Amino acid sequence: MRKIATWLFVFIAAIGLSGCGYNTIQAQDEGIKASWSEVLNQYQRRADLVPNLVNTVKGYAAHEAKVLTEVTDARARVGQVQATPELVDDPAAFQQFQAAQADLSRSLGRLLLVAENYPQLKADAAFRDLQAQLEGTENRITVARNRYIKAVQDYNITVRQFPSNLTAMLFGFQTKANFAVENEKAIAVPPKVDFGGAEPAPVDAAKGY
Image 1 (cartoon, one colour):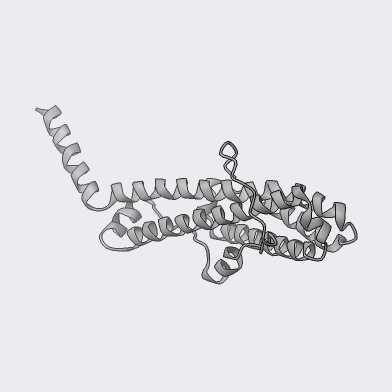
Image 2 (cartoon, rainbow, N blue to C red; image 1 turned 60 degrees about the vertical axis):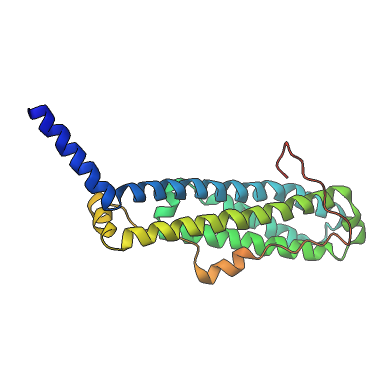
């Protein structure tokens, strides 16, 4: 009899938790983790392109030391931010992450503008391939970031609205950090990539770009 009562309690509790948003919060939290992981993957893909891009530009425009140093330093600052899954729960750390990525975006933009002044560099096959990879990566960053923004918006609404906010308070669910509106424009604008009328490099199915 006691065993039946225990199972009945568990059943009622499960129904109650489901009805007050517990399962929804859990599912949305997992969705945020997945979308955030993809954001980090795409930002890392971009960071990995920087050394080769800088070295290629340096081969034709070594005297553009200031711009080359800016890009290298910006990449280093990105690497200093511990981009862990827990970062989304720390608004200050998340803001630092945003600032570092926006700084790298601006630096890459200036680097590509410098390249416009060097026809031989623009005609270099390796440089053009890196441009194509960078353009594709910037597009992937935009898509991944937008998915993360939507996932966080849905989650934050759930943990704030009644009655699921009571469940959130009971189990310690808190709102997640999101890309700030004032920083979103700076982050979202990818460096301009000019192929001079030529077709972008073909996508490598094995590499994903």
